Structures are given as C-alpha cells and as structure tokens.
Image (cartoon, rainbow, N blue to C red; front, side, top):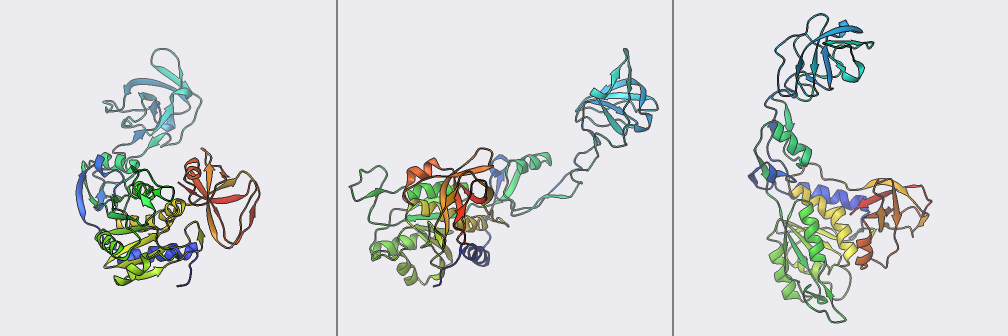
Amino acid sequence: MAALTFEQARQCVLEQTFRHAARPGIENVDLLSAAGRVLAETVVADRDLPPFHRSGRDGFAVRAEDLPGALRVIGEVRAGEASPLPVTRGEAIEIMTGAPLPAGADAVLMVEHAVRNGGSDITTDRALLAGENVIPQGAEVRCAETVAAPGMRLAYPAIALLATVGKPSLAVYRKPQVAILPTGDELVGIREQPQPFQIRNSNAYSLAVQVARAGGEPLMLPVARDQWEPALAAIREGLKADLLLLSGGVSAGKYDIVENVLASLGAEFFFDRVLIQPGQPLVFGRAGGTLFFGLPGNPASTMVTFELFARAALEILSGVNEPSRPLLWTRVDRDFRHKPGLTRFLPARLSASGESVTPLSWHGSGDVPALTRANAYVVAESGREAWAAGDWIQVLPQ
C-alpha cells in the first residue's frame, strides 16, 4: 500500500470511522458523573437566562434620562430579592451585582461614579444610555432554546449550564471499550525483573491513560507473543471490544506478524504506513466489524500515533460529532533543524504561557525519560528544513 502523509492519514481515519462506527449505547447518569462524557440528548432552557433584567455592576438603578444630576436614593435591592419600589423621576435605588433591575429603571450607575451628599442623596456628572450596565432578560438564552445537543463533550462550563437549567441527570453515550494488546517476545510485566534483553511492558499503561483521558474504557489484555497461534487468539479477543489498539509487531521484521494475523481474519486495511516520525509503520483497518490500529512498539511512536489518529477514532466512537485536533501554533525559542521528507514530532517543553516552545535533545523514540521531561512535541513539517528563533511552529501538547 502507498504511504500516506499525515494529513491524508488523519482524514482517512475520520472518514472510515464515521462510515463504519455505530452510535454507542446510551445510559443515564447524574450530572456530576456526566463530566467528560458525551451528551446523548437535546437539552433546552427551562426559562430565560437571565430570567430578569440583571444588574452587571454594584451601583444605583436609575432612569438614564435623569443623568447627569442629583438623585434621591429611596431603597436598596440585593441579589436574590426583588425591589418592592419602582424608580420614578429623580429617584435611584441602590443595587448590587446580580440583582434584578427595579421597575422604572433602565440603567445602572456604577457606585464609583456616584458622589454621596449625606443622607439619601447622590450626584453624578456621568451620562448613561438606556441599558448600560444591565444584562437584559433572555440575553444569554431564551426559554425553550437548545443549550446542549447530542455529540457535545461535557466540560465543566457545560456542567454549570446544565445545572443552571435544572438537569440533575442526563442521557450520555456509553464509553467505548478499548482493548489494548501489546505484542512482542521481549516484553515482561512491570513487576518482573527483566533480563538484559527484555523490557517492561510500559506501552499498555501509557495507552490505558490516553484512552481514559480521551473518554474510553481501557481493557488491558495480556502480552501477545510473536507466534501465530497466541497472537491469533489474542487478536480475536481484542476484536470483541469497540476498538482494538495493538502495540508493536507492525514493522517489516521477520517476527512482525500482526498484519498477517489480521489478514487471516479477513481484515480490511485502510493504510499501513504514514510519512511521519516517530510512527511511520502505522496500521489502520477493520476486522469483524471492529476498527483497529496497529501502533508501532517504541514508546514515543505509540504515544504520538494514538494522539494523532486513534484518539480521533475513539472520540467518534464515543459519540463526538467533531473530534478534536490537538495541534496549536507557538514560537520556537531557539534555532532548530531537522531532515526534511517526513513530518516529525519531537519532544519539547511548551512554556506555561503557551507563547514559546523549546525542542529537547533525545535519543530516539524509545527514550521515555526524555518524553517525561517534555510536555509537548514540536511538529517539524516534511517540506521545511530549518526554523530560526522566533519562527512560528506547530506543537502537539502531551
């Protein structure tokens, strides 16, 4: 199969996942449990927001046509109560932020713009327009207007909004179950003492965290050895999940048998190589109705390819209408070069402000300590060789 560019491969993942993925099941959960989940129902406002003309400042509720000038303060209204008195010509009512505007008033004079003259009088040299410092009733949303639709990932602002419209429980899509299947004779458990020629199985753990962070339910399967029958049995088990992530066994080595095993199960392959580094030998396909990714076995390759491709598929399987594209732009803070020809994702430190990024030295895609020192990857475009300090560059946050 022809190798795809990064953009071509990502587009393929989106198209094929939307084409083949069925909507997940639906379950009802309480509002707090819905955080981070994907909404499966339409939610409408049960009243106007705000439900009254709301003061946006501490100050005085007034008639704009009475200003500038002197006014008589006839009362006070706080948030959570209504004024028993209307405002008439030459009058004002002291008002707090969030309180409903009294009848007759059409603006709020900020407290710092009023001069108290003793007793109940104030004066101001300010002129106001009607509506100034007032949030009109229904300005945010009207009663019966849709405030949240199916396919929306519920972040904390959405939880606040749904609490505001009185939704103690919600219908959300079921979390997809994602089988994680590490492969390789060199892998041992994290509690084992490896021989000099062995490594501990770290990829399954990093993938489990990435899957959970993306909204899936990770299912960590035992390591599949590089022999046909064990690999076949393990892959069959993994294909029972909503998505299968294989780690390792997809390169061109003598014992890289994952693609052949999948082919024996009638797999359809959409691509098996992407012009990126790390992660060039990347397989994406479908077998028995289940989508799968054959991720490269080196840790950086596994992590990067999940974020760039498998995450988007998982979000679609979670019910999301528009998968996130995690790349952002910032400025590189030192001169930087790479060998063109592939799009490279290289470990870096993104500043706390997000305004700059520093490429880090590392020893290739197996260098987990370097990945731990990093909090992002700089994206070196395939057709460009060099960046000077201050140039814009894309970044993939970890």
